[in-house]
Length: 115
Image 1 (cartoon, rainbow, N blue to C red):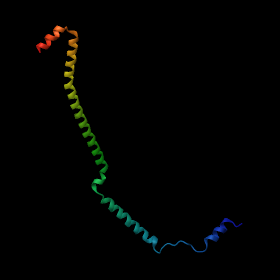
Image 2 (image 1 turned 180 degrees about the horizontal axis):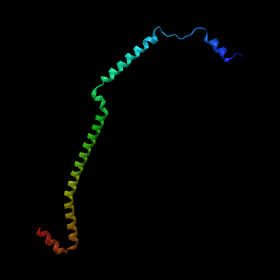
Image 3 (image 1 turned 30 degrees about the vertical axis):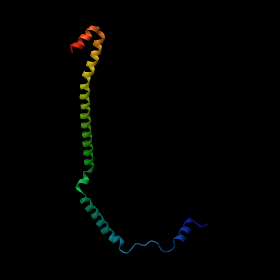
Image 4 (image 1 turned 90 degrees about the horizontal axis):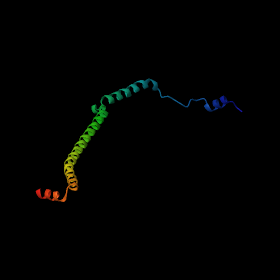
């Protein structure tokens, strides 16, 4: 059995299968610098508002929450006012019923006639 190095040597052959084009490494530096300059120009020409987009989203969210809260509170106050207006009528009705249960029949008749 042959050793591993002998097998690798036989597979390798005499020629190097990989070639680098002439002047590749000499032109690599300027080509990379050109790409870097293009990327820097793209970053500089980025729209002004795109930098503040997350801040604008946060401000819009806060504005929506404030509007929803104000609407909810005002609607809730209207319901409270309606309930306050209804309570005296209900209390008067309850008071009248309680009053009628404790009075004699003649007093009730006299009270209804007088109103």
